[in-house]
Length: 60
Image 1 (cartoon, rainbow, N blue to C red):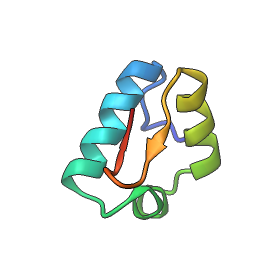
Image 2: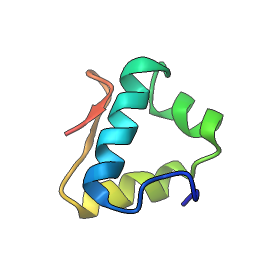
Image 3: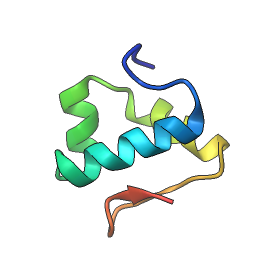
């Protein structure tokens, strides 16, 4: 995972959801733009109890 991302899963959740809300059209766009491994990001947040909901462009 990129060094720019928070290590704490709750901080990561907040950071990613903010970026999705404010800057990117969806998770694929965010990952491509920030050079983030999407599967790794989804897995890290899933392990913390969150899943990506494409309809609302957020992890919950």
